Amino acid sequence: MKKTVFQVQEVFANTRESERKQALNRLLNQLRTPVPPKEDVRCSSRAPRSTAV
Image: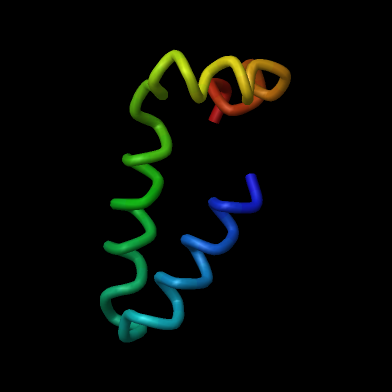
């Protein structure tokens, strides 16, 4: 989760206001894609919550 926060902050730091929505949508799409099995184990406790988005 912490990594996600940094990614969002990075988007805000590196994009103009007009491009932010697009950049955040891109980030959301990345987060929605299925995570590789290795990462899945680490995040298994929050998996149900993240899929409900």
